[in-house]
Amino acid sequence: METREEGTGMNQKATDYSARKSTLLEQGLISLQAQELISELETELELLRKQNESYRNALRAKSAQNPRMSTKLRDALYE
Image (cartoon, rainbow, N blue to C red; front, side):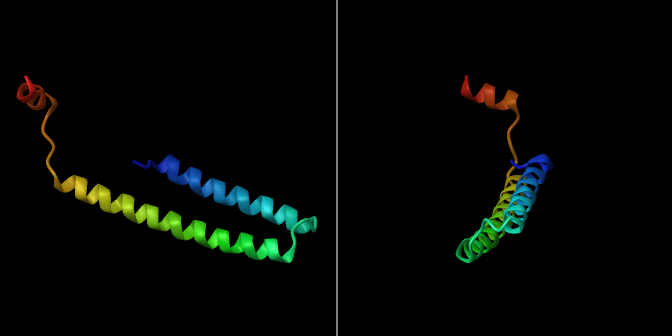
Protein backbone atom coordinates (compact mmCIF):
# COMPACT_ATOMS: atom_id res chain seq x y z
CA MET A 1 0.00 0.00 0.00
CA GLU A 2 1.10 3.52 -0.64
CA THR A 3 2.26 5.45 2.35
CA ARG A 4 2.23 9.19 2.68
CA GLU A 5 5.96 9.12 1.98
CA GLU A 6 5.45 7.32 -1.34
CA GLY A 7 2.77 9.79 -2.37
CA THR A 8 5.10 12.62 -1.48
CA GLY A 9 7.83 10.91 -3.49
CA MET A 10 5.65 10.88 -6.57
CA ASN A 11 4.85 14.56 -6.12
CA GLN A 12 8.54 15.31 -5.61
CA LYS A 13 9.42 13.53 -8.86
CA ALA A 14 6.81 15.56 -10.74
CA THR A 15 8.25 18.75 -9.22
CA ASP A 16 11.77 17.68 -10.18
CA TYR A 17 10.70 16.95 -13.76
CA SER A 18 9.01 20.33 -13.98
CA ALA A 19 12.12 22.11 -12.71
CA ARG A 20 14.33 20.26 -15.19
CA LYS A 21 11.94 21.12 -18.01
CA SER A 22 12.00 24.80 -17.01
CA THR A 23 15.79 24.79 -17.00
CA LEU A 24 15.95 23.24 -20.46
CA LEU A 25 13.36 25.71 -21.75
CA GLU A 26 15.34 28.66 -20.38
CA GLN A 27 18.45 27.34 -22.10
CA GLY A 28 16.56 26.93 -25.39
CA LEU A 29 17.35 23.23 -25.57
CA ILE A 30 13.79 22.01 -26.16
CA SER A 31 12.07 22.23 -29.54
CA LEU A 32 8.43 23.22 -29.89
CA GLN A 33 7.51 19.62 -30.74
CA ALA A 34 9.33 18.35 -27.66
CA GLN A 35 7.56 20.95 -25.51
CA GLU A 36 4.18 19.75 -26.77
CA LEU A 37 5.09 16.12 -26.14
CA ILE A 38 6.33 16.90 -22.63
CA SER A 39 3.12 18.77 -21.83
CA GLU A 40 1.03 15.82 -23.03
CA LEU A 41 3.12 13.42 -20.96
CA GLU A 42 2.80 15.62 -17.86
CA THR A 43 -0.97 15.68 -18.28
CA GLU A 44 -1.06 11.90 -18.70
CA LEU A 45 1.21 11.41 -15.68
CA GLU A 46 -1.08 13.51 -13.48
CA LEU A 47 -4.15 11.63 -14.73
CA LEU A 48 -2.54 8.27 -13.98
CA ARG A 49 -1.39 9.45 -10.54
CA LYS A 50 -4.96 10.46 -9.66
CA GLN A 51 -6.35 7.22 -11.08
CA ASN A 52 -3.81 5.20 -9.07
CA GLU A 53 -4.76 7.08 -5.90
CA SER A 54 -8.43 6.38 -6.59
CA TYR A 55 -7.76 2.66 -7.08
CA ARG A 56 -5.72 2.50 -3.88
CA ASN A 57 -8.50 4.19 -1.91
CA ALA A 58 -11.09 1.79 -3.35
CA LEU A 59 -8.87 -1.17 -2.46
CA ARG A 60 -8.41 0.11 1.09
CA ALA A 61 -12.18 0.56 1.48
CA LYS A 62 -12.83 -2.93 0.13
CA SER A 63 -10.16 -4.46 2.38
CA ALA A 64 -11.62 -2.73 5.42
CA GLN A 65 -14.99 -4.41 4.76
CA ASN A 66 -13.55 -7.93 4.81
CA PRO A 67 -12.77 -9.19 8.30
CA ARG A 68 -9.41 -10.88 8.53
CA MET A 69 -8.84 -13.94 10.64
CA SER A 70 -6.25 -13.77 13.36
CA THR A 71 -2.87 -15.40 12.90
CA LYS A 72 -3.57 -17.87 15.70
CA LEU A 73 -6.87 -18.92 14.14
CA ARG A 74 -5.31 -19.29 10.70
CA ASP A 75 -2.44 -21.37 12.09
CA ALA A 76 -4.89 -23.60 13.98
CA LEU A 77 -7.00 -24.15 10.86
CA TYR A 78 -3.99 -25.13 8.78
CA GLU A 79 -2.67 -27.68 11.33
